[in-house]
Length: 174
Image (cartoon, rainbow, N blue to C red; front, side, top):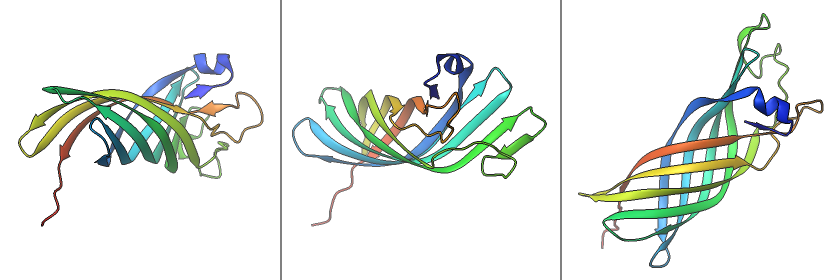
């Protein structure tokens, strides 16, 4: 999470998360491709005031990819990411314990959609019937997901992600 308030940003630590999904890639030039993904992504933060907040999103990245065909094929990619919140979980020590963010006892006001930009690099290795790859992403939220009008306000998602992928080429029957 990234807060507009520098003091709030210093009080939080990134919480480990995960993402899993599928992608479709369509080449349109020798080195370029359009890559569409559907990811279930979990991200959040831990704070030094004993609060942990995690969000689960369905994210739809639309990425332009450039790849060079050499034995270990390096690639660069970038593009927008649209996210839809699937769930939110909060753990606070304010006597409330663990609760869903939509619980009436929760005071977390937030937007259920997010828009961000992703940039990254990766490398692919050919294997029988497909290819394996590793991608490193940086995703930065462009939209304030908080509905809070009081500080800290200005809350944006930010994630550093490592993806291990297997790509299987699908061919049409003649």
